[in-house]
Length: 146
Image (tube, rainbow, N blue to C red; front, side, top):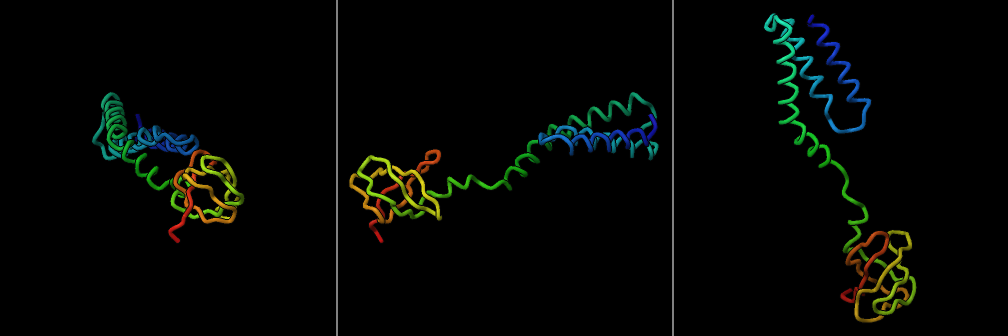
């Protein structure tokens, strides 16, 4: 196969990778095709079966070795759940919340459903510490250390 067919195949596979959501499959085949095209251009791969063998092996081996680290690196830049970052924050009870009961608390300018996980009652306007987040509900206890 002519070297420029391999380059075109590699560019087409790279375009498919860009057009499809995540996964990183086509990019390794694109790289394999471009490398085979360059090796063919240099005169190192003469017969078609050798070119196809190199393409197959290079694509699969590169996918086996580089796909997982690439995905981990890209996922490492994702922002952690913003809700999970609420643990340890200070909220203010919007109403009286008896022990083990549900009520409302204000945090970061929003009103949240809250559950008093302490043994005592939380008064309206009292500062509370968020101890956990369950869905859209905060588990709070009084912050009497301040």
